[in-house]
Amino acid sequence: MKYLIECAEENAQKFWDWICHRGGLAKWRSADLSCASKTWTTPALTVEGRPTERQGWQMRDDPEIVTDPTLVEVFTSKAVKRFRVGLRMGGNGMSLKCTDAASARIHREVEKAGDGAFYVFDYDTQEAVIMATDNSMSLAAYAAKKGWVQDEQKHE
Image 1 (tube, rainbow, N blue to C red):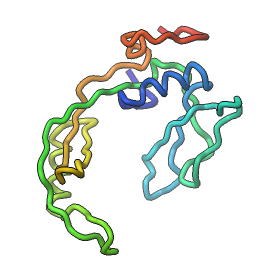
Image 2 (image 1 turned 30 degrees about the vertical axis):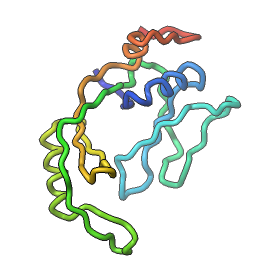
Image 3 (image 1 turned 60 degrees about the horizontal axis):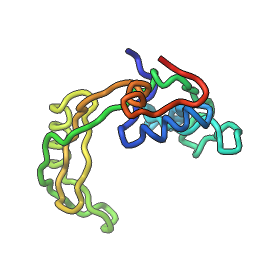
């Protein structure tokens, strides 16, 4: 199945509400060539019922509108590895950054974890946490599993 939008489990309720009550989801592509593959998702309509405007110059002004929850992928993630990383002072002396060796290890471990893997940083322990996709399904299937009801129209 080809999904048009990815959604982390913690955003599924919000995305479902936007489909049901805010005209669907607006998928905004990047106009910034330094991060051309980046996308953002907002409700298609404002609370007042007007089309949502782009939120910054990085967003193109022609969002793709998705109203079918079967075209939205909800994924759950699980931690598959955590390890302490080396840190160094940032160039401005005001922030901490991962060392080059730590960055290389993080990228290796994310790649090893498979498609859809990513990392988060645990600031309390100064550890990188490698997250892998545990399960995925359409937003329609996820909503059915949770018992959510769509008010106006049904999607199979």
